[in-house]
Image 1 (tube, rainbow, N blue to C red):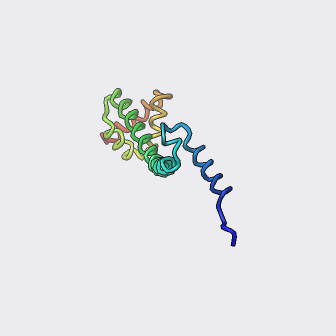
Image 2: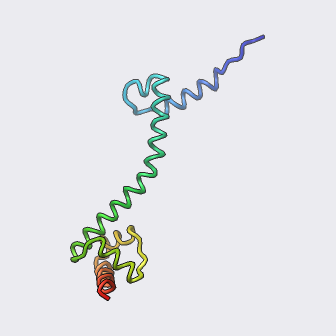
Image 3: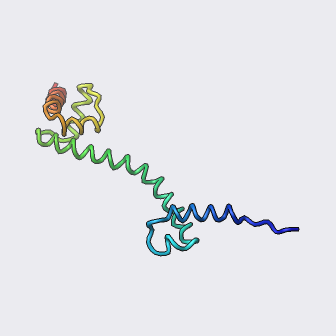
Length: 119
């Protein structure tokens, strides 16, 4: 009986993986076993970092809103508390965009939050 091999599929698989590993340093783009290990690890990091990106963006929006609120004499936590009490439902991304691109509107929002905290 003739021995069956995986010649073409294996070559295609290796070519695909080596192509994915382009740009890696040294053996990580040249040696089959190292390429395989590196790609598995890179896929794991890619999955984790898709989640981490969401955290990083939220943290950045909070820093921006906090800085803008402090320029207007409020802390971030006071601003968020005032927004909740005033029933203003803006998320951190929207607040950040307002603080950067429409400071007058952000001023009005801060005033609303301040008055809601006092009342």
